[in-house]
Image (cartoon, rainbow, N blue to C red):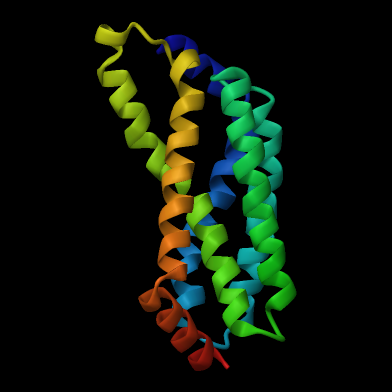
Length: 173
């Protein structure tokens, strides 16, 4: 654990430059969904998302889980930024599509929260499995981000998801 703490401590400025905008992003999400027509929260959300995405790429250089973690970050961070860009493109012309893409981006970003309990399982079972963080961090990243991405995609394609997005889009116009 001390070695793991040392990795994050050695890149404290980068870690803070990633975590603080991510925290602000997550705190701003409810405002964006509950305050239809308020432009500043949405604009700030897009800017924060860009910072979070760019710093995630930079942090992946120092990945604990090696190339497996790095590949998960590259894939899901690229998907996050792509979804954010698609939402930005649709923000004025097609509010329903904007909400769909924004919801995807938010779910991907929140994948890190799903990754944490997965890591907890790996830490809790490490005495049995003899796996070290460098061996399971990447796997945990793939599992956590995949769960969020799959769940939100299934919800968006469900009737309930489609009707809720449509309803939100019409209340925002």
